[in-house]
Length: 254
Image 1 (cartoon, rainbow, N blue to C red):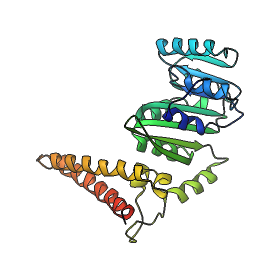
Image 2 (tube, rainbow, N blue to C red; image 1 turned 180 degrees about the vertical axis):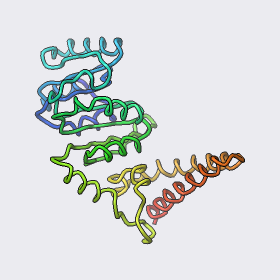
Image 3 (cartoon, one colour; image 1 turned 60 degrees about the horizontal axis):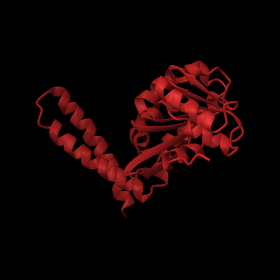
């Protein structure tokens, strides 16, 4: 039996049981092999744009005796899929911008998909923004640490219709009270920090954003040395973000 890392285990937890799954950027196909071995899903597509990782995935699938259940395909992003072929799509271990590009370039393949499980290494805000703009419901988020690195795993479901998506996302992103009791948190900071994670903060969450504020302080100081007009605008934007994140952290410490 394949033993998944803590990061991939968190991704696997969100796979919909009983339906086919596609793992995009599969590398060694560890995730689909593990899920099929455990009987969580009946079959899978393991896709990768690079020949080397795809061949490694093929060897892994053959070694597990799952060639009849896991189809390894070489192709760019969601181009390896047909519409209505899978219920869950997982994309893990890439930058948020890359994940957004994959989703944006494969709209046809998303037909019939009920869940997206996305694990960006960076740029989580970009992924949340894409889900929001494209009518997906962000239903769960996990923050975890492995080998000294922090990862976020996002699970989003396809709504039954646009009205359901709008209602869900309005409840998720609008009218969240600011910790100070004055006004509400901006959509920008909710997209940045994660609306579910922010509602159920942990010590790991606090540690992540404390480090983030420290990095912002350094960046704001560096930008402040520039005389360019655009630098002043950027400094003001970062300062506003820094203050809002700091407000959340102060609330967590009380």
